[in-house]
Amino acid sequence: MAGLIFVTALDVLILALFVTVIGIPSSLAVLTISLVFLYASWVFVGTCLGDTILRPMFGDKKYPALFATAVGALILVFAVNLLWLIPFHVGFVLYLLLCFGIIWYGFGAGLLHWWSLRKGA
Image 1: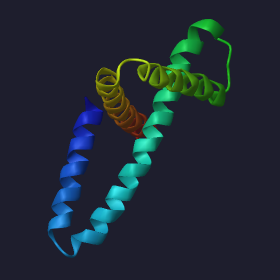
Image 2: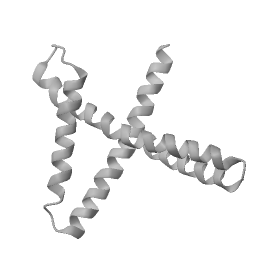
Image 3: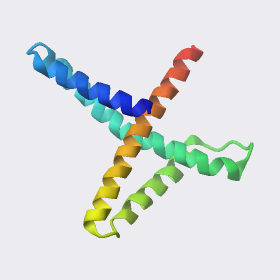
Image 4: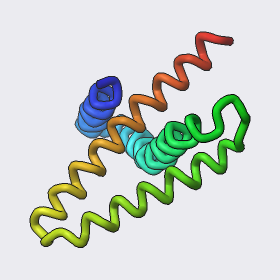
């Protein structure tokens, strides 16, 4: 839910900054940062998914975070490509829903992770 609120607030902020001439460079900067975070949310979701799958397998043993990211990214790519086997109109709608879910979850999880690091400092 935090990701949905953040994405909505970010879009409103970008549109509000576009209204003024002085705010146009600021809104372009916020838009650029937002696009970077959109791609980062896919990586963060892949890491969380890989960690969720690998934790029961390894138990208390430590494994590299890059390994969890690779496993999660492989599953995400496999899931996205499986959606294209469904007829186009249904597969495209499911693909969009999956993308929006990943973006919202990624933004929310990223914000909560950032907040936990900030509170720990």
